[in-house]
Image 1: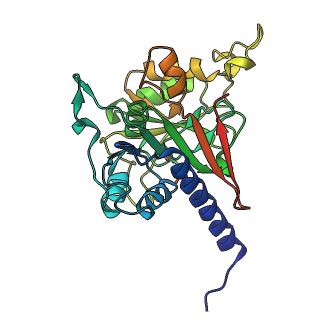
Image 2: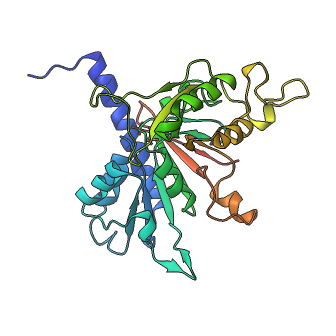
Image 3: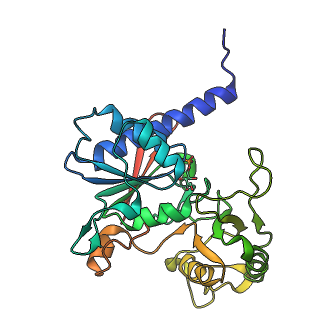
Length: 287
Ligand SMILES: O=C(CO)[C@H](O)[C@H](O)COP(=O)(O)O
């Protein structure tokens, strides 16, 4: 007879928290009229696909699902949903059709809905899919909720061209990241973790990232004393030669983007769903 240990029951509670968040996010944000839907990567998104499949084939008959990498592609296929790669979407007036909604997991979510992503090394395609969607929804368990990024998930995943890794590492150290490392593929792969795009991931630790509202005349958040505000850090990181994409999803969300005339360029979710160990789901929305 299988015995339940405290560790196995804690793991089961986390799984049910992820599942509850995913099912509620799908119920709230996937209307039967949706046509193009983004599917992210990671263990929580498995339940997003399960929730969609559970609605039956007629619900998704007119929907096409856009993956964020090979895991996500496999999930869409295994569920019998219609798959279309990001670059194969039809053009409307010369522009690739917008996704109605994209669902994805996160490694950490701050109080302004900025995200750290890339724990599963899929951040580049995840960002491409998020910005192609009118509405991006994050799903997670409540361990991911945090006032400031880099508090619980202490490193920022950065996708780099392998050739550039030594230079990027030394530039990151100069920016105040104490010990950035190239992510290993162990235990499943000897050598570096190679992304779906043939790149490497650098995990760069930073102290907790400030929000614009934290800045004062004394605290500038520009890296002085190693302290960074998220927008300033993101701006510097994407400018490093060799960096392909960063795991900070920041700036504005889809609703704010429309009002700024920057439709479909939003990296931030409009809502994050957090499952809790008690079975409750907390929803954090943009202020
Ligand atoms: O960003 C990701 C992959 O690059 C994942 O969405 C993130 O790591 C969360 O994964 P999980 O749902 O397994 O906690």
